[in-house]
Structure formats: structure tokens, C-alpha cells
Image (cartoon, rainbow, N blue to C red; front, side):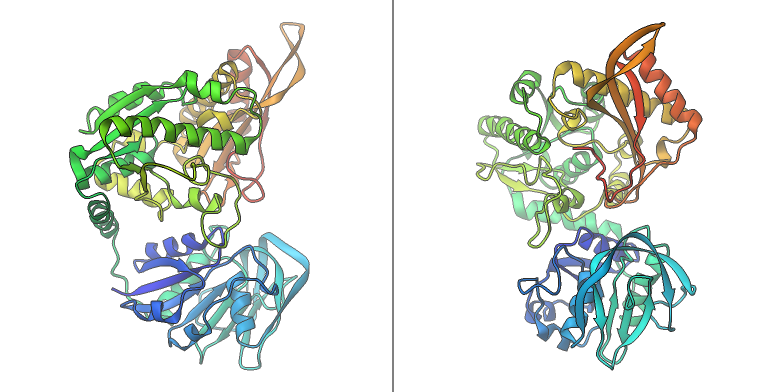
Length: 508
């Protein structure tokens, strides 16, 4: 089976590159950016290498570097963003701080024909995320494209098989990004498609068998697609040795516990429901900082899991952590921490349980496709994403049962109206955030002073980038009217029109 290796320099989209290549039917995997030539040389079927982006500056002395010997592997290499700069610098080019940064959608002007940019028009929309720029290339390299602020936005040395892109072809905002990656994989690397999704399922089940063996394990289960899929995969591997534990934190969605009971009782899982509402609200009392919230929730989850594991003599904790959780938590060697996901960076440093994350390298859309193949019900597969810390991070500031009840009802209204308008399946997620401020309003001809709620509805393919949903005003008006009519504590509704980046999906 042919393969493309992605060298990770800490970019938010390193695994997204691998995922996009897997979508083309070619196996792709992520490996540390500073790996040695010998490690790559051992990989059977290696047809090409991609150098990912990253938060570092290629001009810094302590910036991540690659083993120069990799250039002698005689396979094509594509550098993206930081990888583009690093490849140029390694080849004798020059990288410098740009006068103007480029963040977001940018117009690319294609200057020369090439295998890499085949099929692109003279002008295309691409997605940039950089300040440093390649300002000089060796004479043997050709400039393929430029933008207003970046003279060398793409280059090639066809003889040496070296290619660079300052922009990100892996994100959906680059209109012809998939075509560019296909050009590299098929036209340049000459890879053949032979990778299928069933390979992922078989690989994970076999890995779970090897990792857990005859030991007992527990999984932190919610009705979210990630933990549900992880549970079914590990259940296939170890059967009754897996105990699925659903912890009702009091921070869950509307009627979440009832859904868990109904769905998972039919799937043959060994299920246990734990009511821990009082413990979570007590732990979060007077806490306003979002990172502290995430850490408190993560530690309390583990404490409860370890209490149960001790009684059950379980040695492993299985989690449905996916790659977007991990990269935002700064879990890889060179990545920056954006926020601590409760089940990743917010975990205690010392745990009695051994952690196993079968979905750690996958994205949400991949997980959904696997869930479908596993026979999980449509109502789980199609559900909107819900954060592990629950409504605690949708209540900006201090968390109380009363505030959680407000944001839970508001979020339920958002989802109901999206379903009525037949828009629910067309957006990535829709929810409400309760702000820690009040505003003056008029209700029933009287002055009111009540909370403000923000509605956030976004469209995305993988949660790594997102656009706010451009909904009809009539739908937004119905959402606003229902929230202010049905929730006595609210008199104002706002709509968040910020994309990701610069924002994140959640407010906290």
C-alpha cells in the first residue's frame, strides 16, 4: 500500500493534511517533524513527504528543523506554510519577516504552469496564515504563484522533487486545495489509491486488542458521536471487559441522560449511569476562568472514573478524544496550546488508569463515517458537536445551576428552530452562550434588567476552520423571539458573526 508521510511541526492542520490525503484513497500518517531519515526509509510504500505548518518562525535559531538527510530519500517533498519556508531555507533560500501579515482568504495569482498547480485558474482564492515569508530562492527553483503581500507563494524544483506552498491547501477555504493535494499525491508522487475506511476500523480493533488484552477497561461515555464510536470499537475488541460509564454532571444537553439510557441499552454495552451533579457544581463554585473550569472538570471526571475502576478492577480508561481536541490542547511537540480540552491537557499528570484513545488521530467527519459502518443510530451520527466540559463553557464566567438551566433551554430552542427550518443537518453546530452581563429591556411595557444570550451557529467540515452560518433573518428572528419569550431571565439575543480563526468554536 502506498503512503504519504506528514512531518508535524506543530501546525493546527498537520493531521488535517493526512486526513485530506486519506480521503483521496491513499494512506497518510503523521510523524514528528524532527524524525530521522532512517525512520522514514523503513516505511514500505513511501511515495512522498509533506512538511506541515507550525507556530514557530523559520528564521529563529531555535525553530524546529528536519534531518537534512531526508532530502536524499528520492521521494517528492511538499512544504506547507512553515514547511514551505523551511524547505526554501534548507535549499539555500532566504526567509524574513513580512512587512504585512496574511491571515484568512487571499487571492493567489498563478504565474507559471506546473504539475502542482495544474487545473487552477490564473486567479484563485487560497487561505493564508503567516507573517514570515520566503524572500529569495536559489536559481534552480521556479516561482509558481504570488499574492499581493507574498511574492513567493508557491515554488518548485521539479528536478529535485521539492515543492512549496505558503498557503494551506488542506483547509476548505482554499477553493482548489483538494485538487492541489491530488496533483501532488498522484501526478508528482505517483501514488496509487488503495486505502479504505474499513482499514481504519480493523486497525483500531486490532490495536485495542493488543493494547488492552485481557484486562478490564472503562470508557467515559456520552451521547456524543466520538465516545459512542470509541465505545463500539473497543467493545468489538474486548467485549464485556469494557464498562461504559456515563456521568451526569448536571452540565449536559436537554434530556441527555434519557437519550443515553434509551440508545445504549439497545447496543449491548455494559452501561452504568452515575449522578454527580452536586460534585461538579460544588467544584465549579466561584470559578470564572475558562482554563480553570476545564482543568477542574477534567480532574473530577478522572477521580470518579478511578473510583469506579478500583471497584471493578479495571486498568484502562478509554476516551473518545479526536485529533482536533488534541491539537488545540497543544499536545504535540511543537504545537501551541489554544485551550485545554478537559480530556487532554486538563487531565491530571498522575493517573492510576492507563489512558487509551482509539480515535486520537481522526477527525469528526471520519468518526461519523466509521459510526455509520458500525451501525450506530442516525440520531447519534447526525447530532451536533457538544463539548466535553458541557454547558460549563457555554456559561461565560461563574457556573451555577440556574445559569446552566438558562443556557440549556436557549440551546435547545436554537436546535429546535434549526430543525424546523430544515437547516440542522446543513450546519456544523448551533448553540447558545450565556453572558455574565445584563442589559436594560422593555417587556410588558415595563423596564427589565436581564441576561443577554449569544447565539452561535457555524458551518465547518472538520472543526479546524469554520464560518458563521449566514442564516435567513426570519430564522434568527424566531430563535430570538422564542428565547426572550420562553426564558424569563433573558431580554436580549445577539448573533456571533465571527469565523474560526480568529475565534474558536466555543467561547471558552
